[in-house]
Length: 250
Ligand code: NAD
Image (tube, rainbow, N blue to C red; front, side, top):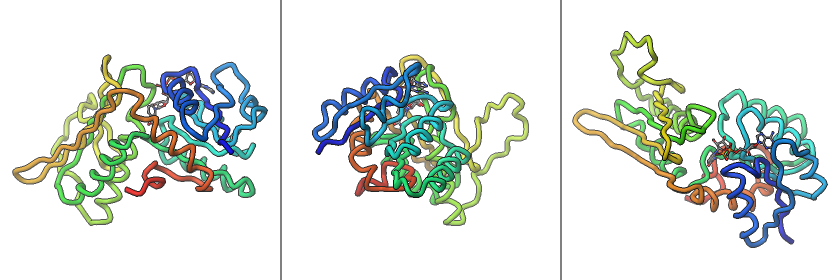
């Protein structure tokens, strides 16, 4: 039996490609396209078993709540998931334990980016300094990107577990915020530039050497195989999962 799928944000740049990918994937059936102005109940009425959300950081929690309360598993690509939002999703799932709903929040669905994050966490304890530069198209609503946020968290966790000291930084004057923003002590620089899609560099530095990990999504097609894996697997993973890597045997 095929998996009935609803797409939230179906008219957006990612949503349109997700609709095409679902329609093309064996064993998946696109049953509802929901965008602004349309009633999310469309997804329930169409019998959706899994919803995919690529909307807006301000809209995603409302959609998630709607799906969990209606027993629909959710694959979330929308960015802006910091600790506050994660906590809200955990609370929502705890309030609805009988639903058995699976929620996958994946900061990045491309295999290359998932590997880049994994390699960054592996390398981070061995270098004195680490910073992230993320580069995206200028129509992106949030900074830093969900991928950078997640990479910084993974790096910080790996460095804390290994007892690595914070990256050295003698800056004492920076009224304009030129040194970028910090997530758990990891500095992130956000570039917004017409022509770009989604790119990230993790810069690691030790005495006399640097290591740069770079990932480039050159086309939104790069995210689609990961989205399809998420849709296929989410029902088998009740509760909250953060990161597509948990569905892959890397
Ligand atoms: P977009 O602006 O092109 O599309 C968003 C769509 O969502 C629009 O059509 C908008 O009308 C719709 N929308 C907004 N609120 C809604 C609501 N309440 N219900 C239904 N639809 C609603 O944006 P995009 O480039 O497609 O990106 C969408 C999100 O996905 C962003 O947060 C982006 O950062 C993220 N993203 C994630 C990945 C990943 O791999 N996880 C990859 C690319 C983009």
